[in-house]
Each structure stands twice: as structure tokens, then as C-alpha cells.
Image (tube, rainbow, N blue to C red; front, top):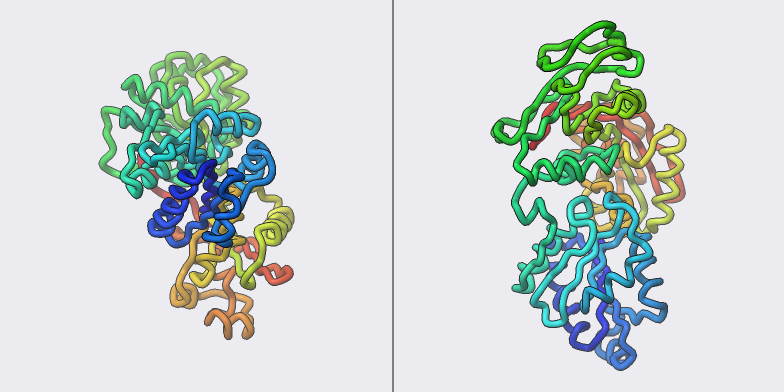
Length: 410
């Protein structure tokens, strides 16, 4: 995770130095870059702080656009109005916007402005406030009222959000204290201990709603836990007031046709639930030290294109722990919001399988193949390689398809 902290006065810059130390202390894998846009201390920055900070020559709006493009965590030390004007042009999607935080010059208040849940701005603000001894100003309704939030549920379980507009409706019901009805495939269970007064979990098979066949069947007020809807035809069926029509969150099975299901809901004017899907694929990566984010992105893009995959299908990026602080991988991970995990040499060597070994790589890392082994190692429930090692200039990529999760947490 990369933090870009910008200040506008000498006092603000001194606070940014304090923040830098606090962030690195919280997690040494974090990268922090300090910026200042104050002419009067530009020379002092060079004299006293050397390469630890950058004077921003371009407009604040342009600088903010660069940070948004990189998906960095942006921290403005100053007035909220300055931050709002700087980011207004770039605010687009709550699932992809950069986390934005404002801190006053005295370091008394830490305010997450944007991307509080999926981007993690709320959690980051709380962490920074603890380090500074400041007050976190959290305005997100679900957080303030300590209630369940659909987008945090998706993030915690590494699920892809299909229709982000559904988040608002589900979270509104949660805030109103209403029961949230969640459909899960029958292959998946919900971790024990959840509040059954707040959640109604239904489980049933439903593979291809678009091509279904349920002529003359009445499902009003039926219990879908015991209903088999596979291969059904819903052309003439009335589902109003049924359990089916009242589902709030629908976790897709991998065989289900999302386009057909969504079309059915919309065409029949039924309540459209929030659709979530599992991310099935893991990218294993090995690289020489110093490879840039752009070089890594080009290699991964090519590997995904070969396998007809998209970013929202990728659950994790995996490598050896020697790459914990490899900046190019970290920057790519931040930009695309794909979690980066690493494994010890012993964990990778413990795997059995047909891996393409390299003596050169083994001499450096102690493991003859990093990318393939890391991809498989990250498949906690088991999996297999769909793409063996592809060699690029100083980068190797492999892709594994993992077995789907068997349990979710509410």
C-alpha cells in the first residue's frame, strides 16, 4: 500500500514527517511518499529533508489525478475544502476510487472522505488517528451505527461485486434493523456464530435461470431451502412476495449465468439483489529486483489475455517472501486492489507437483520455481495450474484456478 501525503505549510509538512514514521511503524511493507506545495519551505525541504519529500510544481488537481490513477492512499494535511476541490474531477466509482483522507494541521482530526469501505479509508483513518493520538471522524452510517455492511462483507470474503448499485439498498435495510436475506449455493456454508435475528440464510441450487422450465408452478411463500429450481422455466411464474423475490444478497455459484439471472429479475420487475461472485484465479509471480509496476502490469495483462481472464476474477497475487517489499508488485497490487501474499521458501518447497525448475532461480531464492509454486500455495482449498510459467523480461507469471471457498463469514 502506497501513501501519498501532501501538505501546504511548514507546520503541515512537519506533521507529514511524523505520519511517515507512524505509518512505517504500523507496517514496514507500506510505502510513503511526502509532498509539499509551499514555496516558502521549498529550500528547507532540500536542505534538511533531502530526498524524503517532493515539491509539487504542477497544480494540486493534476497531482491528485496522478495519485488517483495509481490508486494510492491520498492524505491531505489541511482544509477539507482543498481536498474536495482537488479530487472532484476524478471521483467516479466507490469500488475503484482512491482512499482519500484529510488531517488538520494540528493533527487533531483524521477524516476519511472517500472509499471508506472497499478502499479501506475508514480503517486507515482509525489507524492513523491512533498513531497520532487524534480523533477519527467517521461519517459512514453503517460504521457509526456499528451495523453490518454489504461492501465490507464482500471485501472480507474476497468476493467480486457485480452490481454496485445494490450495496446502497442492502446497507439501508441493515441500518433500519431489517433482516438481511442472503442466498448462498448449497455447496457453501456460513460460519457458525452469526446472528440469526439479523440474517436469514437460504441455500438452493439454481443453475441457469434464463433457460429454466417451471410452467404453472406457484412459488409464492415457498421455502427455497427445500426447493429444486435447476432447469426450471419461469416464464409464467409469479414470484411476488415469495422468499425468492425478497432475497437481498445473492452469492453466485460458478455455473450460474449471471446475465440471464439479472435479466430475469429486471424484466419481471422483481427486487434485484446485490450479486456477488467468487474470484477463482490466482496469479503467481517471480521477478528480478527493481521491476517497475508498468513492466509487471504488461506481463500480467499478457498472461490474462492469453487465458481470457479479467482483473475482477483474480483473487490474489502470490510470490516468495523475498518479494515482500518489491515495489513494482506492491504498486500493481495497490492500483488494482488485488491482495498480494507471499510464502516462505519452506512452504513452496513442500508442494509436490510437476513444476518447471530453474537452477538460476534456485541459486538466488532457494526455490527452483517461484511463480507456479506460489500460485498453487495460495490455493488454500486446493487448485491447479491453468497457465504454467510464462517468461517475460525478468518476470515470470503463472496462473492457478483455485477450488471455490466452502465457507463465508457474515
